[in-house]
Image (cartoon, rainbow, N blue to C red; front, top):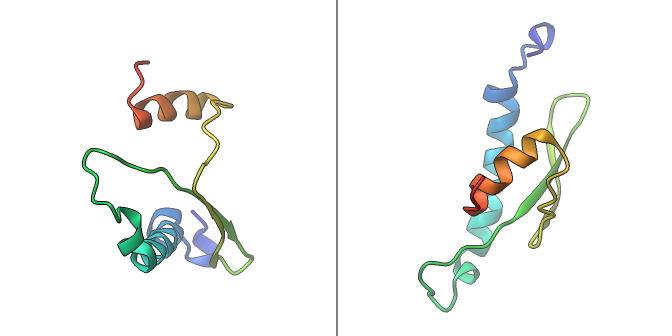
Length: 86
C-alpha cells in the first residue's frame, strides 16, 4: 500500500490488471474455442509493467508461458494450477 499516493495494490493495480485481461479475452473470445472442445483449457501469461503514476501497462501475452518452479511461491502455485499432486 502507498498511503501517501492513495494507492492500494488490490483495489487499484489489481483492478487495472483484471480490466486489461477481460478486455483482451473479449477481443478474441470467438477464437478461443472455435471447435467447441469440451474439457480443455489454455494458459496465458500476462506481463504487466507499472509506471511512476501507478498506471498498469500490458506488455505482452504469452500463449505458452513458462511454468518453471523457480521460487517457493511458484512451487506452491503451479502444481495446484495445473492439477499436479504436490
